[in-house]
Image (cartoon, rainbow, N blue to C red; front, side, top):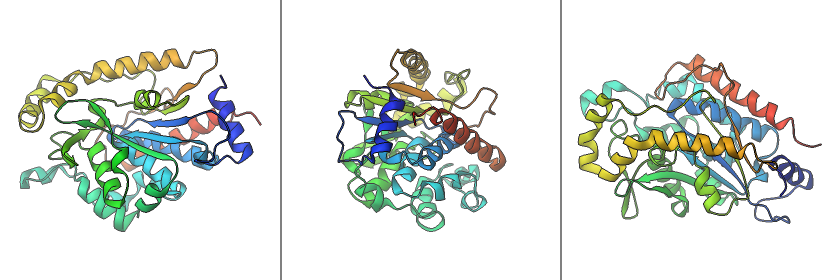
Length: 313
């Protein structure tokens, strides 16, 4: 089996285009989210695009903030907009505003993000995402079953792409009610598949590059007693199964870490993760510190550029 780096290098050198491959590989990009922590994976995605490798992938999988970064990558304008995680004008739009809760609104207003910020401040070309031959797979959690769900079947038009991004990022309680798509309702994909490489492998990927937002010495922690008490009424109304997934999500993260660690030690690595460097600052899910977010973007860009420097000439 050809290694991931060799497969990417061969595609770039040959000018291989998505939908017109001459090899037998199916190369996927899997992007972890985590709210503002996704600034790290934004920088990594930026480095991939700067290296001219975006068209070397067949599919892009993303969870929550990772889905947002994947969407930017597929617009063809990643280098223009991925750094907008740290832009003052985006922060001024108040997508995240704890004061809204006192007026009965969500702390995280995803409609404001998708239909205001991504329309007027940093215009996201949703039509380009839909038309891109690279498959786009936002991952969300089914509120009724608690299972991970690939929302790619809904990314068929502008509204479908917008709604899929909201569904993948719908943090329980903080972002309001689950998002409806078709006859189902969805919440944050991080509750069921925070690191979305398993779906990529299940759907036939032969190689997966995983963009992580946690350092190798970081692990997800179980929900606190207070967190469980606050979220209980939400899940009673909107999805018991998703609530169970939330309570157990740290086990999933731990399992993902173990499987990925084993995968990157394979003799011919086809499953590779890139993480923020050791010593990188922790970025909280709702961080509004633009200097920290900007630093995370650059650290992510540099660590991915360093990995890509290993590409065969």
